[in-house]
Image (tube, rainbow, N blue to C red):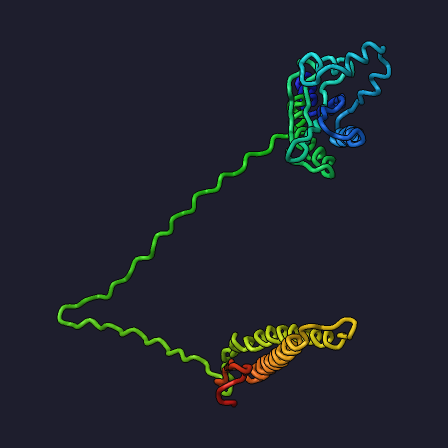
Amino acid sequence: MPLLSTLFLLAQAPQAPQEPITVLVAPSDTVGVPTHIVEFAQEHVTEQARAKGFTVKRMKDILRRMPAARRRALLRCKRTELRCLTSLGQAGKTEAVLVAELVQRSDGYRVGAKLYNSKDGALLAEHLIPGVREDGMLDALTQSLEVVSPKVTASLRPGSVPVPPPEPKPSAPMEQTPAPTLEPEVKPGVPLAVKPPEPLPAVRPEVTPGAPSKGVKASRPWWIWMPAAGGAVTAGAGTYFLLQAQKKHDALKNSTVDNPLFNADQVAKDGKRHQLLGQIGLGLGVAGVATSTVLYLLPPGKSDVKPTVTVGPGGGMVGVAGTLP
């Protein structure tokens, strides 16, 4: 009886807590990453691993107590090879080796964490995140450690990770039996009374008295700018002819006995003709601009006024024709 009681008490006694997993933080695998970012990432991984409950050993603390030849061999070994991983784990006397990966690619950086078994170099867990920007590397390392830490604990400490209960399967919905339709009792010789359908109420549109109707805003026709465009052209031509007439006048005025002008009559005729053409051009230009101004100021859509252009042997005319509002 006392023996059975002792065995019962031992079975009911709480188990001693298991020791935390020892992890060696090895140098990171980097490609195309600045040195200062690698150093920050190494310290960040160390702190995050401690926060996850691991007993962390840093590589630089272990190498400080080793001979120079042994130190160079460990630093030169390729951390993807089995012998290198086991050598690192044996040197640090840890259960696992943690290697952070920072690799530059075309779409950004591939960032993540890998944990290997120190005994045989087997991969315990890894989580890599592609397309990470430079300012998001530390956050990506934190996320990777959150993913791999439970897997490593479950592999090296199987009894310390509680197994989540299975999710209950959703029960199939019960089919509802439709209620039976009661048919009216039909008696021979008695007509069946059928209730006519109720008429639907008529819906009348609401009309607000005095509400103004929205009309389409009338726009001005495109041709009202034609007189102004023609007036600008003729005004430019008139200015040119007036300048030519001024040159002819200056040539006649500067003619002296010492510097005579042999074709003075022809120069005078050309000057008069240029002066006349210039005055006509300026007049037509002013008339064209004035016509477009009048048409623009008229209310749109309320008049049938249209521009007219008349050209004759002695000049031209620009005007409007129609009925003013």
